[in-house]
Structures are given as C-alpha cells and as structure tokens.
Length: 598
Image (tube, rainbow, N blue to C red; front, side):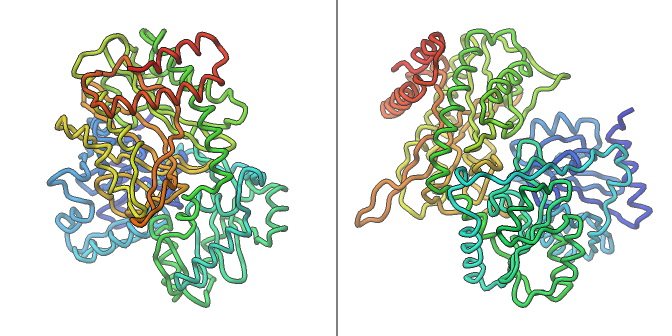
C-alpha cells in the first residue's frame, strides 16, 4: 500500500531525530543540477507529493514548507492538500525566501541535513551563509530519504551514442581547444564539468538516462594535459571506447569520480560553475586546498550559439514538426469536442514519434482543457483527464527530440464558440507573441530588454503571467537551455545574458486564470544579424515554428492595424512553408482556412 505523505514525513522525522537533525532539505536535483531528474532522484516528489519540476522542500520537527514559483502555484495547491506542507509562493510579496526563513525561524544550534550531491554549489553557499548567520550548522553527507524510500526506482545507465559528424558541425577537438582557451582567459588551469548537457555537447555524445532529455550521467575533468570522462560502465560501448581512444580521452567509472576527486591536486585554479556543480564537489576541492574559480561554464555559452550546420538541421526539423502539429490541430478542431485530454496527448505523441528521425518527446505533452490550462505544467493522467467541451480553450504544449534538433511549441484552440472576453485575452496574447517575434534590436541587448514587447499587450488588460516569456532551447539536448532567457525578473542564479546570433529562444506570452482557463502561444525564434551601420549592429528574430494561430479565437477588433499585418504575414508564410508537406487534400484545405487573411 502506498504511504501517505504525512506517514512519509513522520518516518523522515524519526530518522532526523536519530541523526541529530532538526531540519532536512530536499531540492529538485540530481548530482548534476539537472532541471528534470530521473525517477531515481525524485526525492522531493517522494517526500511531498508535489510533481512539479521546480521546488524545494524543508522539513522540520514540527513543520514542513515547500517553495515553488508562479508556474506551479495552482498545481502545488492541489497536490499539497492535506499533506501538512505549507506552500511558499516564491516571488510573491511578503513571502520569505528559504534563506530568510532560516535566519528568522531556525534556533541557534540547530542542524540542517542535506545531501551535498543533490544541491548546487551556489545554493549550498547561500544556505551556509544563512545558517551561519542564524548560529546553525549544516551537514551535507547524509541522505535520510534513502533510508525510508523502500521502493525507490533504480538508477539509469543507458548506452551512450556517439553522434555522426554530419549532425555536429563542429568536432570535439575544436570544442576542446576553445574550452582550454576560455579557461586560460579565466585564469584557470583546469575545470570540472558537472552539467550533463554541457558534457554531451562537448564530446558530441548523447544518452537516454533522463526521460525526454538525451543525456548520459557523467562527470568530466579537463586539465592542460588530460581529459577524463567518468561514465557508467553499463553505458560504455565499443563505439564510445573507440571514440575515446581516437581522441585521447581517459574513460573512468562514474562511481569512482568522488574518490578520484579527493585524490586530485591541481597545479593551478579549477573552474567550477556553481549553478551546475554540486556542493559536495566544491567542498572536496576546497578541503584539499585547491584554489577554485566560481564562474559560468564556458561550455554553456558556447553551446547556446548554434553553428551553421546545426541551424540547417534545426530549420528542417522545425518544419517537419510544424506539419505534424498542424495535422493534429485539424483533428482537434474537427473532432476534439468529446475527446479527453490524455487520449489527445497520446495521439499527438504517436504522430510525432512516427517520424523516422524523432526518437523521443522533448518533455511530457501538456494537453489541458479549461481550468487545467491555468496550470502551466499540467499533465493529464489516467486518474484525471478532462473531456473537451464546446465553449472553452484547449491548450497543447509539446515537442520532440529529433536527429537534427529539439522542438517546443504551444498552441491554444477554441473548442466551439468561446466568450468574447476569452477571445480578447487570446488576441492580446497573440499580439504579444507577434511583437516579440518581429522585434529589431541593437546588439548587446539581453532578454530583459525585450520582455516588455511580449508582455505589454497583456499588461494593457491589467493582467500578467507569473513566469518568463522565453527560454533557450538545446540542439538535440534539453528543451530548456541557458544562459539566454527573456523575462522581467531574474531568478537567483540566472544571468542577464546578451542575445547573440545563433541563439534559440522561445516566445511564449500567456494568461492564466485559476479555475477558468489558460492561453499560451509559443514560437521558437533564432537570433539573426539584420544590418549594421554607424549606430551599431542590429539583430532580429527568424521564426522556426510554422503553425497556424487559431483564428476562431481571434477578436479582429482587438488587433491594432500593424498587429493584423503581422498575423496575416505570418500565416502567409506558414501556408507557403507547410503546403508542400501536407499531402492529404483535407489537411491542405484546413491549412488554407486556418491561414486565411483577416
């Protein structure tokens, strides 16, 4: 029988008492600070019942609190009901941060236990500072969850794939040279890479250890003389061994990394990215007397700028993906009423995965009708899957992992005739998406400089969305990628990165009305050079997503003349690009109707 959350927390508190801990912290993390984690590392979910992909749980002897951001407020309220856990709405006025809570409510002499592998170095340092201020101690070596999680899923070690050169555009030798040059510029002799997507990109490898994320568990140590890749032995195959031999890479067992790290003494400074490197790694290096440079990983910035070959593949993949989604939208518009969310999600997933070069989804498909669409990361299940009815909005956010790119796209559809107020909200969200997509901006601008373009039409209705407007997208990698982003406020650890030609970014404004509906329209954009003159270099966006926006949900009177021109121009381009890919005459007829001029 499945344990209730209250029972799980009681077992945890017993273990805390035995080990002399007054507090225990469980973050959403694996040893590599991954955004999405494999089931083996879903400790915070196990302890709290909250299934969102971002959240931090703090358990005390008499209290428990969970911090999460605005994307998950509605979902967290539902999932934490009757658990005894208090929801802390990060970013809301008057809500204490985790560090502020520690300084205010921890008693002097209290001890906080956490697993140092399962928290980033950056967050660990912030916690250490707050605990010191409160006169408290931190112990990072004990994982108390493991003791009570009896049916914990096994860890993953899928075979690692070496990418064919035609998919890469830049070989490992050049990437390694660029990395070493960047290390020298930062005053470092070596680096430890912990982020899985960075390591996959550096070596031109891919894995399957985390659902929807084509990465493999690994650590990498780079010095002037040597490159060591720590991979799970079950994941190592002949192809990887041959690649490592040819490129003079030392393969080591993943399980030996921490033992080896304890014995390593670097000649000069070691660069660590505190956002992706875990706290235990930093503590080991510092305890051994190694000098550390805490800075953004040079690999993060390098992989965010797609090379020409990658851009070619991405355009091809997004066109294929757009055609599949357009066919699905036709089905929903014609036959969606009466269908349930889960069956529609499965239909879209099957359509996408039927493509020869699509190997996986890039995240679990969000198929949400009515009030469920107000939860930004909702997922229909066998136990809860609402039926689409006329008079409401259906939101579908989905994407795939292809040989040649990673896709992400959202469309919201009117099922039958929807109320005028909902149409107005949809129309202003569409206007925001188009305003950002058509932006021209000076080189050096960051996402925060552009966020208002997408948000202004929503603000004009005295509404807002409690999330960013855009995130980076990986190349055959994670669907969320930094350092680039488009948002009004930076979260702890985020940087205000300059938008550079070759970067991908999503464009996804929305409105979310709890208990009623949600609207999101998302295109993926590629930053491009536009022109250069005496005033500087100007950049623009090239849309990669070519999917109709539902004109049945548009209030033409709520569009300004230039917004109407933008929408008509976009739809004319959608028609031009997709028509050759839609062989079914009925699909082609739907595309004509869906992209008609208004």
